[in-house]
Length: 151
Image (cartoon, rainbow, N blue to C red; front, side, top):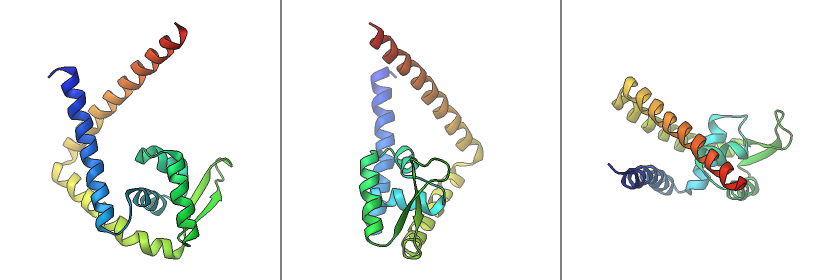
């Protein structure tokens, strides 16, 4: 497979998964961006807006806008992180937990079924290979950017 074709297929597969999560969120009456915040805040009480942005590949401003909306609706509280005072920790209110619990628990159940059907070794292999690709891409693309700045 030539490089362009590989990159096209890799990107398409990644986008395919994202589209499935968009559909999942819509079917549950929320947006993809709200799902991202609820998922992370529900599973990790020490999570921050930065974590949501990085894990779900969302712009920081988008995450901030969603968080402010959830705060206005009484579903989320933003508090300064004890780890890093510049970051805002996401804390779901009881109403936020009631909204998140069925959606996130069901989604995690489906994700667990998918991983279980693949088998432990296949999942480990998938992650190992994808991490190798990402590490190599990060190194080479970062080096390329540095060289470009020097020229």
